[in-house]
Length: 362
Length: 128
Image 1 (cartoon, rainbow over the protein chains, first blue to last red):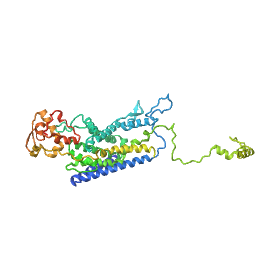
Image 2: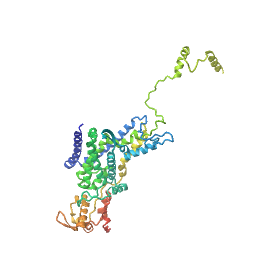
Image 3: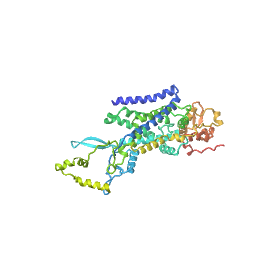
Image 4: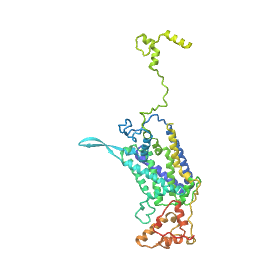
């Protein structure tokens, strides 16, 4: 698909997602639908979808270890091995997974192929490329911190880790604009970081021709959705404010399974909530499932023990074998007849019969 | 299923973490606290701005007051209604809303906000 069509298609979808609750709450006053029914439905889809997909993945056979071996394997004691990049046991694999999940180590290894002309001749270069890793790391960690900060809105009696996170995140105590009246509430670093990172990840998709070529609406849509989610959140915190105690009453009600829709919550909140509902309902059907899938990457989470543990392929059917011993038993007489060497000669018939008779007598 | 035990354990832990708010909130009061108005505040009927603005953005007004007073020395604020207010947290705001714990703290605690007003200002002594 042409990238302009892809962008227009996903952009239009996100605009629609913003407009639906806007019209629904502002014009039709469907607060119960957008405040309670849709969030619950989205949560149901999210949790069921995740379980179904993970179980489906778990059922796929992994008969053989296929870890990427990015270091020296363990062999002789005098050869230095790399226990993390080529793990021998589960300990190394766990460390490797932690690096992967928390620090995106495989993205850190990203390089870019470049053709250059040096001294009049063409040359292939592998360029150091860390921007994707940096933006991805900033984006994911900012998203996590923002998600955890939101616990103050839907958890009754705010846990202390949320307060600590908040004070760290907002410790610059800076204002939105250098104008009086915009100085409060203090701007969170993660808010800016998330928006900047998502914007970068989007621009990167358009700017680099190869990435643009392989990008589909399924790549642009989640980016736009998260951008819209972030923008409505930023708008709601710094510009178009809502009665936050009423919002918390709604959110706590949802998680207490006794939902209520308090009066006087602005439309912007319902837009924010609807975007989030769509995001989590879209989760199990999309590439966003990588948040569960990363734990099941067979090239990362398996130890490289192929050389010293036997892995039997479970769907091997029984193969009819015919060993040399059996072959010789079958053709021994003919073989002796034509003078072929045999491993076991024919024992004299009479002696054998006498021996068995004696054995019976005893 | 290969490593089924490990995958199912991981799945249960993951879903459990995501569902933590459900367990955490179970059996707790959901009702938002209502700021209590003193007799003097009720009598005044109208605050500096209308109620919806004061609920959602009072800190913005306070910040504006602080900056203009401290930096520009402007001590008086003319509200939309034409009424003139003396810009002071302790002498204007807390004059009506003298019940800090029932008016300020209740909601701030509810949504986990810790305003730094009292880093500089003296906390009012409440008559119990």
